[in-house]
Length: 149
Ligand code: DAT
Ligand code: MG
Image (cartoon, rainbow, N blue to C red; front, side, top):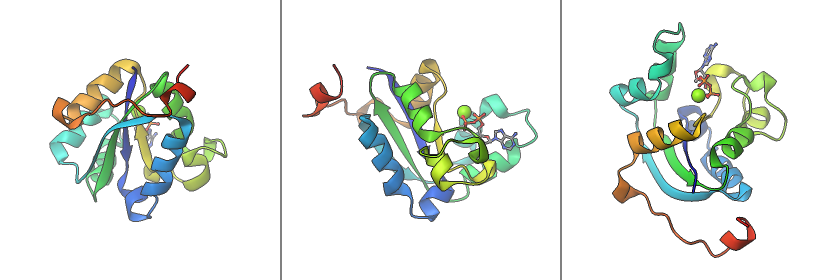
């Protein structure tokens, strides 16, 4: 089953939007297989965003993601990566469609509430960066046959 990695970022936690955001992924049909509340360390943030290391916004991005606690989630489902990205919406909240998390709840790129993996390969890598295998539970959900054909 495809996996994707989600961060409910510091702004979302501070704004009390954790439940609202988890609800949207649950309602989409994605199955939670791991979840933790933590403050991301600077080295882990730099690893997670390594692809952006040379970009001018890198320092502020790392400062933001390490500034306050987050909730990290591993999700499973058919097309989990693409489905989660659609539910999250475009990187720039002003371009995100209404009905998406960013389109409904955010205004600025530097406060865009949530991270979701951008490829199946990165989903695997990012889940492994934040969770040990022992922290992941791939469980049979009662309604799986009504969501996964
Ligand atoms: P996404 O989070 O939609 O996957 P991304 O991987 O391209 O977007 O960038 C990671 C984060 O970096 C993004 O959520 C917000 C920030 N970011 C990206 N492009 C930016 C830019 N041009 N200016 C400021 N921040 C930016
Ligand atoms: Mg990204």
